[in-house]
Image (cartoon, rainbow, N blue to C red; front, top):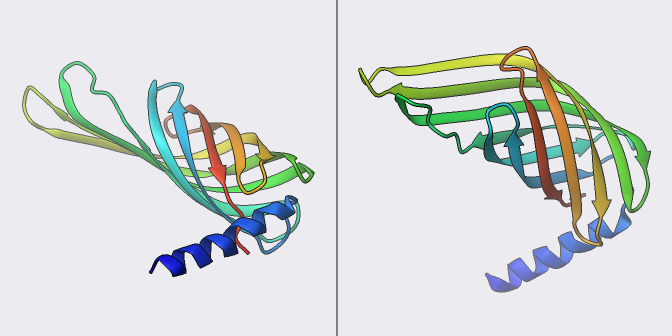
Length: 165
């Protein structure tokens, strides 16, 4: 089994050395997110596909480590995003992009006084952008965005992506 893992690593690592985003690239990613309005951190997993050199589409899911408000317990919060990125600058080491998409968000908790479960879900529109730095095998990204409608929240995500052809 170990030789299979070594082969897969050798197969995946060189693909990120080409830098510029091109049609046909798949990009899985993982990041740390902070919700500015809710004040809680989260973890984000994503997968994007470049169907043109300047445009990629995909989605991500973020689970927030929500803190309980007074009188509540067991908070749960997550968001599911479907976004498109348009690269304004698409160079080998540095890239800038605009982001637009839709979001589905969920918040739930238990009221301590009566044990009642309360939940709420909303849909909104994502607007934002990002910057990426290619570090020979790993692409770091910083992505601020704001969701209009729904829960109206600004979030910042910092993470890493790799290229898969």
